[in-house]
Image 1 (cartoon, one colour):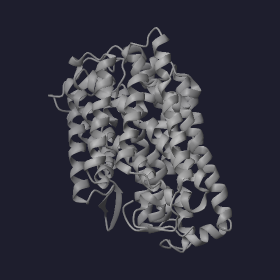
Image 2 (cartoon, one colour):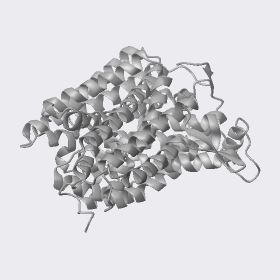
Image 3 (cartoon, rainbow, N blue to C red):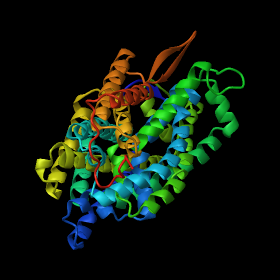
Image 4 (cartoon, one colour):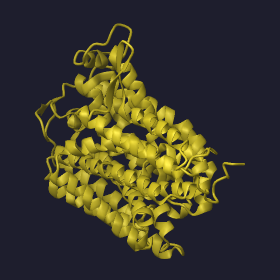
Length: 498
């Protein structure tokens, strides 16, 4: 692991054996989808491979959407942020609270449009709405740019726990990558759908054990919180956040909520549902994951109380598990994190492959083999980022990816409204928001917030949200220009002039 660290013993053979056993069982379970595909009459159909035939019911959708929304990097990064910043790291909780009403209201509409029009990606929906090939390509490129570093981060999550076990990181990472590639190739979306419930059960067991056993080990929650507070900057009396953290906390939560279900993998999970009511039921049930996320975030505070000291915050969770749990159970927890990377990485690759075959290069034909090859190429690209580039570069790219995917919000979500706006106007807004947001991010040293002046005050706001506001403003201005002529909508949309 990078950076100095102490406070945890070295793992032993029991931890490694348990890790390998559970990881292998999950891979084998995903591989059984090959048997199912040989016997299913529609198994060779591209939509069956990429969207599971749009036939997933409530429980499968719940595990699949939760599985690709709450990833292994969530288990690693959220506690790391809490470890480094304290209460500010809990901004992930309100954004998940905000996002589910949004899913309940908006995603069934998108599902219905996609179902009736035979659409499988965000770019498909935008093309049907605005009849603009240029805008379709813009949405496609945003999706691919946003999801590639996300896949790389899942592989980084696997490597983090592998290195914590004292195993050769690069060789084991190649084995994990090969396993991901094989079971995605064979099963398509059915593979992560089958194994998502294994992943979620394992993570629930690991986290519930952690929030029960670790505080007892540390003398109770009161003693644990007092000990953690001694290691973090003290906020003003009566406040959890420092004054300068309130606006960034709120705006990051809002921008994250708006972007969460625009990613190719989260949208793929939604479009694979069997009905709009399935999505609504999931929007009601998915907040159970928010409770889990809050418990996961607590691990960052527990690490301080347990005496974990590291200059590499991403290693906080592995070090905590090794310091408190028996070796064999630490191996189980590491396997839960690794499997938690496998499932979303597969869905991400499938969603990205659909963008390549349907929108970026439709000449490929959009068949199963083209999708399989595209998904494999995307995973190879992500693996190359992990092996040959600094891990921080992938993290920085993922930050930019969140900004870029947020700029698809006007075309995809506001495009559902019956207003008179053209694809050209949406393209102007997308280009302006993407360019301005990217420049601000680089000017600020790739930080997620930008300082703006409000009269005599200066506040830091989410850069993605500022870029989105500019995006929408440009759309409104461009819509008033005669060159942005309104084109006919696709048949899946109501006519805005009625």
